[in-house]
Amino acid sequence: MFEIVSTLDLKLGMFVADLDRPWLESPFLLQGFLIEEDEQIATLRDLCRFVTVDRTRSIGNEYRADALFVPEKRTPIKPPPRIIQYESKKKLKLPPLAVSVERGLGRHKFPTVAYVDEIRIEEELPAAEASFGNAQDLLEDINEQVSAGKVPDIEHVESTVDGLVECVVRNADALLWMSKLKRTDNETYDHALSVSIHLMAFGRNLGLPPDDLHHLGMGGLLKDVGFIQLPAELIHKPSGLTPVERARMRQHVQMGCELLARDFPMPDAVFDIIVKHHERIDGSGYPAHLTGEEIGLFPEMAGLVDSYCAMSYPRAFRPARNPHWVIDEINAMRDVSFTDSVVDEFVQFVGLYPVGTLVELNSGEVGVVFEQNRVRRLKPRVMVLLGPDKTRNPSPGIVNLLTDPMVREGLPYRIVRVLPAGSFGLDSREFYF
Image (cartoon, rainbow, N blue to C red; front, side, top):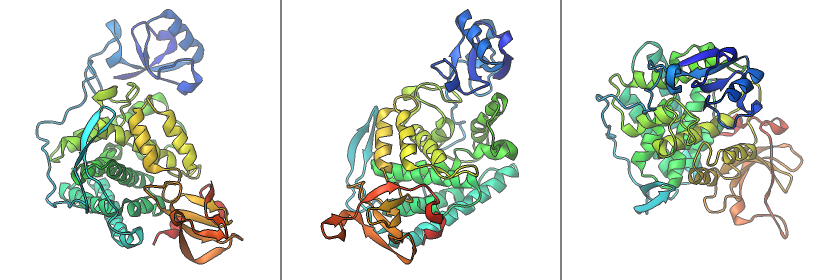
């Protein structure tokens, strides 16, 4: 239970969950701590007017048992007994040359398959566009159903995710291209779909089998379904949230779990993503403040992808951030919010030039990264949009940097810099097929 407390009323045994200012402006190393010394109270009074106290994590006389999310021992939320395992009615085929291999990722061990791109991105784009459009329709339907107090249609969710998984298995870059370039004016829908696609593509990169990709995609689409039950003015507030508003926002996890507990058969793996994707390995997450191995691989992957997509997405008050800046921020979370092995794998998956990145070539031409090269990440396929004089190409061609095409004799093409979104008046949404 969260409570706003004046710093004049602070007492030993209270757990401070949030401040009335950013944590980075404070001397406290941990974002959330138990008051054990009078000196801590004195520092808080000098720094803040009020703080948010979590009574469920306080001790002694300051503890309250009527927890908002979880009981005092930080036990994670469990699926209600009526939630059952779901097996996709549509048998998802493995890619050609798939071989089952046992591999490890930090503390996690899991079977994998060796994926190969079945077709080129150009051939996959029509199917990817259709599956992407189906997913957008699904999100609109979910919003209408939840707003009306109904549970989402499980058959619609499952069939839509099946279509996305098939695209990811054949060539993940096609859906990544769609998620970057075919955006709408609905930030909530865009984010959910972007997280779902990136999460499945990340899982494919790890070699997870199609059934696991299905769980990741479903979890990505549904992880924030509880937001629909919160006021729109809170969700889309342009300025910073107050401690009370932040506590209210965090209720979306419990709201989503309670909603989907009603006649919505769902695998435990999907439920884990929904309930744990805001947990962090250092215990600073929510709602249960889990640490380390308590979180699990899929929820940790979902939390990392959620953070990446949120930082990458353009906002009304700023353009999309430079991919290098985003990767630097992700690297700063290593061994703090996420385990180093998961961060390493994700950074390798994304690469320096993610699909949809605007780049300038040493020829002076400007292009957008069209497809990754899985072996040579610094040499993707680039769609050339502007000529050396920065005039538009009426029929953009594609340069495959892996084949070392020549700008002129002795000088192969290469990327010299990443350009900010919108450079030279380019709107990336114009360039999907």
